[in-house]
Length: 270
Ligand SMILES: C[S@@+](CC[C@H](N)C(=O)[O-])C[C@H]1O[C@@H](n2cnc3c(N)ncnc32)[C@H](O)[C@@H]1O
Image 1: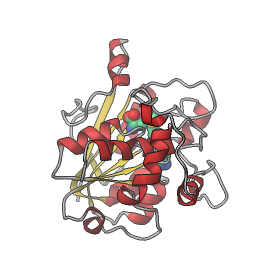
Image 2: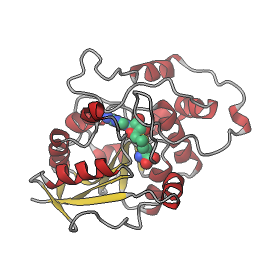
Image 3: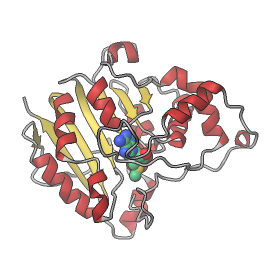
């Protein structure tokens, strides 16, 4: 998703893929709980209390009534509130299974497909963007996806505070915000300190899979992942796209226009 955004904001996540259904026409009432939940995600990049440079900015982006209604109705069922204590995946998912963390799922198109294709794995999706969370909640309900949970919070804090060391079977980071301007590169998610923290949360033998359509970010990813002693590349350089990662419509369009996409798959070494 090569969103070459001229503004001083990160690339926008994909636009809601479907046409607005009829049920979206009527405004949904928003409870005080939902309003509080929405307000609690209103992080400024360097809001007071932030201990690191955020990889996102709060956007008052468009949210459909359907997404808002899904937040209202389904948040309690499928989301786990952020808390500064370790999460027990067996309790969160109601079963023991390998857990894969996805950071920044956007509208959840890929997340849905992967979770459906891999029913034996648990998927924990982390996203800050209200419309995206609402969109994935709708997908969970519409496609009856039992093995997916959502945390709406900064993934850096989720990884630091909620994920136990050596616990994840895998990590997916697909098309993270590219922050194309040089002076914004410090906001990119794939940085040595965060990758070191994240790698420590992956079980030995587990994997981290990143993809980007920004060549200079791909180069940075290869350098950062390659420089992390807890990780080892599964191939020499960039990996072929594995079958479990579906092509998004943005990617298909980009590839048709001759743009590149780079996948990186590294394993956690003991
Ligand atoms: C460019 S979009 C890509 C979305 C999706 N992975 C895809 O392939 O279409 C990047 C997403 O990451 C989210 N994001 C950025 N930084 C994040 C963070 N620190 N924690 C959680 N989500 C984050 C943004 O809100 C945005 O939705």
